[in-house]
Every structure is written in structure tokens, then in C-alpha cells.
Length: 316
Image (cartoon, rainbow, N blue to C red):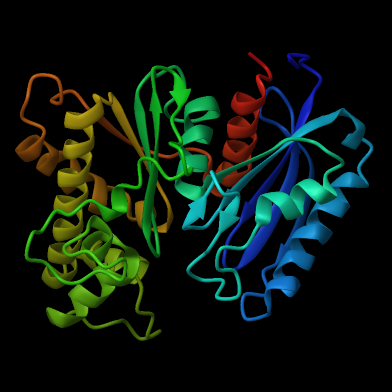
């Protein structure tokens, strides 16, 4: 089992707009980087070519010989048990055998696959806002809502690499249909596009630049716009209910929230902390801390490396 502190992990962060890669060391530093645009409308081979080019650029680094494992954080759904990915925003990849394809190009190094929400949770626990906490929920609130769990000090990806996917907990029993097939999911209420859509339905209008996004709604909310404030309040309520449900099930002590919507700051975090008290009412759920994520756009890479390191027994 490798424990050498000089061993590196090659990390890949795969999404609908970009494929990022890095060589990551035992302190979470990114020693080499590579990046390609995701040819999301291309065929399956086009997308894999972009991944292969990213990996090849990393393999050209002087640090590559120290690389002993590969970690992948991918937009989902993922199936780590089967080694496949079916990202919603990459139509050509449905059940695509990503782990086998990467392993074939990684010189026999072991490959670990997790969903992007799980990667974010791993990153924030290892190097970010949940460092030193044994039980944590990491959440990405963006175009969708994802998440991941750390339990008893270890990442808990579950058999398929999706455990902690809080975005598809139902918080409104008779709520709107969600694209996942369920109803009233956290994501259906709290994602960026849904915050913007609800604000518009309630009378909010974009500014002179015409931007229709959660960030634009947040700016209006800070200026006191009632429809904008109400839409963020509703999103905060949904997130609070989902976090409380998670705390009730697995006793988390902290929830770390990242993603574009978290950039709204107190417009989101203020009502979220308030509403959490309405749902986290049991003695063992009442102390859950809500904090913003720290690692930003590198979280996917850092977390993919952490997941691979845990799976490979690296770095203690």
C-alpha cells in the first residue's frame, strides 16, 4: 500500500463546459494543470478525446512518474460500481465506460470515480471549510443541486459514487415535477434556474442588462426587491429542510455550501440559517453549522484526488 508523501494523484474534473486536470500532492497542492473545453454536443469519442488530451498533457509533466492513482469527479449521474457516467449535459455519454477508458490511458494506475458533489465534499473536508470535522455534508448549489457526505472522518461515496445527493430529497410532497422523475425535490426549488424562474413568475424583472440568473435575482434581493427576496427565501427553506433531513439520518455537524448560488452570500445564508431552526428540532440536529465553501473552482480537482487517495490508501 502506498503511503509515500511524495506520491501524486492525477485528478480529472469533468463537466458540461470544461474538462480540467491536475497532478495533486499530499498537501492538496496542484503541481501541474491541464484544461480542455468539453465538446458537449460532439459524439462520445469527441468528448473522450478531450479527456485523453487533458490526461496526456498531465502525463507530459516532469511530475508524472510520481503519480500512482487517478481520481475522477464527474457530472452525473455516475455509476462507480460499473465505472460509467451519463452526464445530463453531455448527451453523447450515456453509460459511457469512462473508468476503463481512462485506465487504458493511465498506465495501469488505479482509477476512482465519484460524482461531482461527492468530490466537492471530499475537497472541503480535506482542505476547506469542513477540515477537522468528522461528519459533514458538502453541497453544490448551482444549475443543479448536488452533495456528498463525510462520515466518521471518511468520504462516504456509497456503492455508485452518489451518496449524499441532497438535491433529490423531496421537500414538497405535492410539488412541481422534477426532471429526475420525482416531485418537489430540493433542486426543483433551490437551483439557480429555478430561483430565477420563480422570481420572474412573482413579478421580478431583470435589470437593463437583461440578465436572468440567480446572481441577478440576488442583486435585486440585496436592493430590497420583494419577489427576489421571496424566491431566495423559498430556496433557503428547501435547503434547510434537506439539510435537516440529512442531519436526522446521519448526524452531520456541518454543512458546507458552494456553487454559483452560494455566491449570493447573506441573501441565501441568512434565511437558510433561520429556517434550519424550523426543521432541525431534535437535540442531535440542532447544532448543525452552515458555512460557505472555501475552495472555489478547484474543489472538483482537489476532491477527486482525495477520493482516489482514500481508495488507494495514500497519504494516511
